[in-house]
Image 1: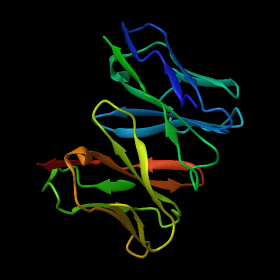
Image 2: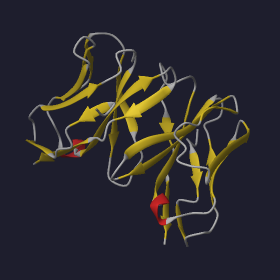
Image 3: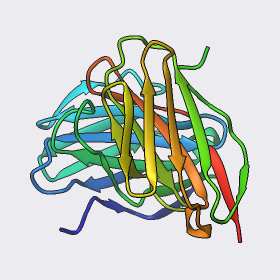
Length: 115
Length: 110
């Protein structure tokens, strides 16, 4: 299996631009998680999906962030408009079940820099 | 109070020694506990999970859980330079959410 696939691996954009991050989970996994990692705040859960349905988006920082999962093999995280404080590494993870008893497999991450 | 607390380190140990990493958590309802390892510039990878009080051993790694004290630890025996990484403690909350600690940097000196 190829593991969790994320694209792009690096993104540099200017403040105010729209940014779209993409994720392909491991086939057969029914949970998908989006995390953000910064030095200041560590690894934070932004949103997670179960069977393509958003379950908890309480970690999404503000309305500029949105996430979708149109099918079992694809998810996007969009930031519009982007701001310098959004600079971070964004990870997508997937698992066979919920966080309680199943390993979450992380993708390689997207390093976002907003200038 | 942070939900999951770890000493940021760095924790420096000589090669061959035992490294002891600690974590405390605030939610008494948490049921599942995990240790992830993250090399610089890489993504986290799971190395241990523990669900009940006591010790769980896997090779050179031992996870310890004490729910009464809300305390989780990870022991790494015979530490190797390749163990140098950041170790993240993660705890489940409200069912399917994982909350991560800030991580402890471990440095194993050869």
